[in-house]
Image (cartoon, one colour):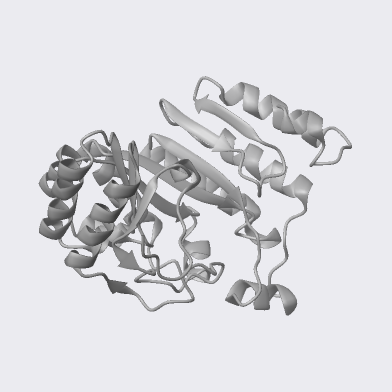
Length: 289
């Protein structure tokens, strides 16, 4: 395999074959993000992608899942994605799922019929980084999309039948906007009603604009307990059906997992227990909850 630069994938694609269809991210301007800074965005040549697929077929006896990297491979023209998916079907008939990152712009440039066609060819899950439902926060982090655009794009994926996995980030509004972040994110996610929802906790990394804002005192980070309060408020404002919820990434203080809405009250109860207790948020007791 020929990988160029750092390669990123969603946690659920940990055991997938990763094929770089694009290099980098076409937007690559989010203030909190350090990913893909080592490369300039471009779409790889079709011939190179096919060579990688053929090489992987020779190396791996069985491939159940394939993830098309990098940041937003959905930016490819539909006919080009179709050719790649058809080749995957030919080389990896055992492959059960192909996944991909997509931006709201990528999604909206595709028709429903195009998305349905991609699903028929094996594209079974799309990952969308919503990050926040607050337009004020989305503008501050230079996300390049509004909450309305997030909703339209998310609903379009759901209508196509492709599974939709959304990521949001705790603490992204800082001290001054934590309530707005929780409530507005709950509003947007409820409107989309995705299949999967993943909650990460903000990690501020050097060499990002947000890091510089923190150093200048312009952005105040939430404490662990404030993150828990924000998560509780978010859950209280989520109204979804049959959504698998995960907040058990290494960045999270308290690991949570459940299906909404049936596990909503139990998750809120666990957060209330944390808020009413004095404890180490990395304590093994809470990591088992």
